[in-house]
Image (cartoon, rainbow, N blue to C red; front, side, top):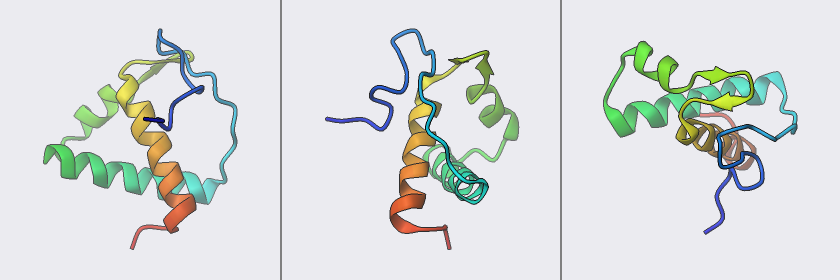
Length: 83
């Protein structure tokens, strides 16, 4: 199964993607990602989101967040902005 992060992050969690998105796409992707996180966890605690999504240089702390982010970008491009 092809994942959104294939070729965009290595086994150590280092991001290797340099694809650009617009400011609007980034904002819309953020909304999709936050909604998906809330639906999956039921948590509205911002500290959970921020700690899991942290980045150290080019290394993602929780690689699942990188996958969720890329999926959110794909969703924006495929479906447009969230309602």
